[in-house]
Length: 335
Image (cartoon, rainbow, N blue to C red; front, side):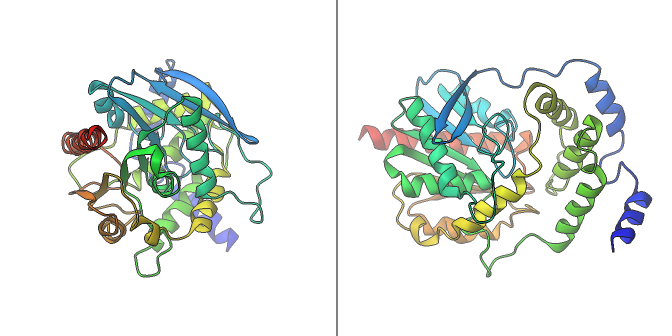
């Protein structure tokens, strides 16, 4: 089997699964310093033995939006255009490296027996909020970050002013819902074998980044921002701690360990918006269609053609829905 895979890898070539012209674009981006992807103030706080890196951007004129990234992604895991609307509307944005990634603690003594959970990761968010003397925040989570955001709303309801749950699920391992398709799993395995073998090569890491994110694109009429993706990847690799190869395994175990939130979601009493792309190849939209109605009075935005990503083309409708939710949550607090 091993020799078969190696032969297939050699036949496919090093640029498999990446758009044409990526090598030239990588060289072009590398020829100059990456742009500054962290324009705010960087802070660190401890949660027990774990130290957490977080960034604050803007002033809290109307409140604070806390953004939580997905599986194995750092605080730079989502595009800037997702939070720019909040800044323009007068909200402070807080984003953090989850434990295991970025400049937060990498959990090197991890094992299946002492694996951390989504509840542990939720407590990291609360530690940051405490460090900021922040009683309440609008909590936004993407993919696994959405699961963490739900967990915060369940376990710390008084700390949540509103909940925005993007392309995620209430129970990832629900046997009644579609899981990750076998062809996607196989494609990712090949991408890892082809581009992940040389962890010391910046070019290989950037090609792997492009190939991996390319799997998540929907069927809508939009293109990936390859230049921005490469520039941000170069920033992670040269200005920060790079990528933790063990984070995916550790955080996937956290998702599994925490199980279903269905029954707890039914008890929530917080303004909630569920956003999902109709063409999400990683997290089937059936997940959101199942858990969203469980949350009392939740609102939904199902974006036609969007995949497991948040392209700029869809931001007008996404921004409008998110800012409307935040405004309604503020009215509730005032009343």
